[in-house]
Length: 448
Image (cartoon, rainbow, N blue to C red):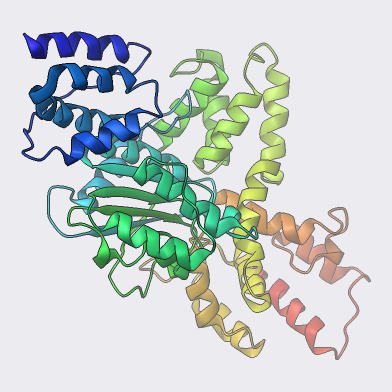
């Protein structure tokens, strides 16, 4: 009878939109949890009816305290908001969940890595929403790279983590070291799921989460990053997962949801839609942006054709901004190697370019390793360079940015027609200047 009464009052309390399944009923011999809960309930309208109920029920409060503790956990695990037209890549979701292995003991960390716009954060959000109910507490720290660069950025992120884990906003932190100490104490006795989104520097993880060995057994940490170096060489191994490009059918479905509001294009737009998706390199960010921009413009086929032609010449502004973050963080020599590959050596064997870059003092093996870590290039088993179409177009756009009307002024030329015209014209004047000769070398390589 008492439990039935409590359930009725409990349902009235949460009828404002929270759906909670209470499945655990543990009886505590100590009343300390009841006292703590009663103190917390005094500052919350949500729990004040429960506090009053405890005073009436008396000895049964110990049982109900256990129920409400479960409620607290469920309320704390708030789902992350996902895009309305999400196309879930179940293969990649399952692959990361398998690496996390939440049914085993110990602590595991997984790094989700890939270029900007490929869907790292979305993948992490989907996994977070699926797994957070299995943990005592959970926290999703977004935009860590950007926020950490603010003067108070690290302290702000530490406070956000503590407010998620400790369910309190009154976390007085005076500096980063104070935050590290408080986080260490709070995380040591809770099974937690933490996502650190867009992390670029290795030491940030320790300042935000502490040593993984200090977490309670069963805890899991997910990191998203553009840079493999951010998760490599940690004291405890962080498992690496590189996000794959969307499959063509999934990219088309995502595009159609944004452009047409359904999963498939109309028959007279199917070939055009497939061409646009293919040109976008199956990059989710690019697919979403273009699909949205073409929404409600189904009666203007000429516009769609113009958009396709424009995409073939240069990447989207928003996509370019996202990819430029990785490019701008490269050193001078690494930028030169990146631009050479984008303009001249996609689908080409790496052997000859390495000799050339060594002669230019670009330290090619180190540069290639950095580009691989940042997912800007791939080198397959056949020793040939691979590059996402949007990344390739970014490199070519950078080269053309100065004056796209005059190929003779480019530092690199990647079409046979332009290269031959330049070599035949009077615009090229031979000189003993070594830098010019090296650039001419690049023209000739592409003609061989």
